[in-house]
Length: 270
Image (cartoon, rainbow, N blue to C red; front, side):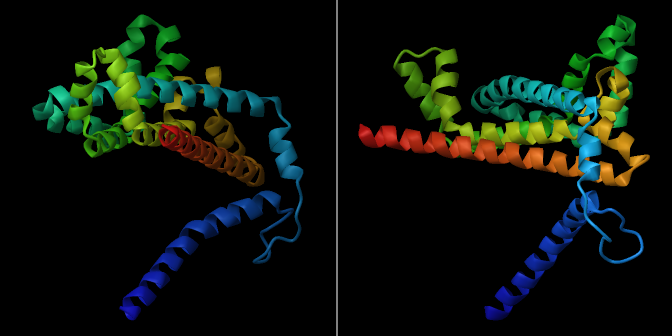
């Protein structure tokens, strides 16, 4: 037993090193004055951070990525959650087919999806096919598995049928049942899916580059542009992207924990 625990610790430690060393190197490279003649940087500076963040395009692209990510996240929650609930309750035989369709984005490259959208909707004009709205729709497609699976897992864990019958017996309609009974019961799954959608869309480059490009430049496009002439500024932007995703995850987890504490306190007061 001790030998198994010993090997498990080594494997976990090696995995953490494998994951953390590239991240640490990226952070260190963003502060390095020069790092090409020795194993360690020759000096540290904030020059590359100031140069990357001092441009007007930095805030603009960051704002554009936040808008696209939040729009895709909200639309995914509004569309996927009721659909998954309906399929779980009313169309159980169709669930294998629904799961097949929701897993299809894993096998469709972003380039193929973008070119298919351009070819399909080009007849309606460039103002539609090359618009931020089309980018949001495309991002919803590629992030569909990340939203659907956590919601389905939460529905499977909750006794949705009993909750629905109890709500209807008390006179609640379908809208009240979903928003006031089912949604609180599967909140953890919905928040997990929303977080995954936000993280996936925020770093999406292929769709953004092909569908909107410079017309609605996003943060990943801005980052890739820097990789062509200065890797240190690109490293600073990559670290900013990671910190933003980490802060978003932490905020969602804190909000979920606070909400659970408030609900437990309300139940205790009763």
